[in-house]
Length: 136
Image 1 (cartoon, rainbow, N blue to C red):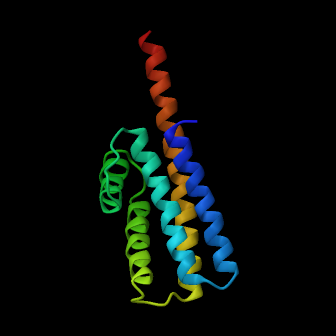
Image 2: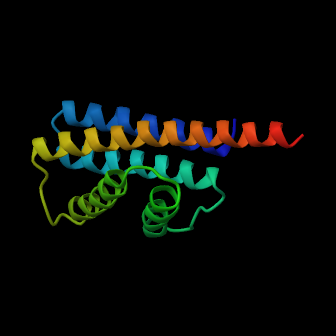
């Protein structure tokens, strides 16, 4: 299994955990897991273009630049990742208690980001394979 596939699998696993936490009455923890799931999706996309930074903040920034600006993914996904990053930091530092509605929105945004990123990666891989076969 490739590093890209492993990162996507981990992202899906984290989103399932976020859903379970939300359903069990742990909205702050659900936000953190939703962010981690989205982060893994962003890492997968950056691995696909060989541009993975070493820090979480670097991943958030590079996702916006490499995948959205240069790669054509919708800007809403970069904004969602930034918001998830900020919200996860706030609840992690106990600066805010997450309302269930906000946690639900975070889980939905993370799931949308993961799905869009999976499609983006599949399209890129398909385009790369097509280009390689035409050049032979």
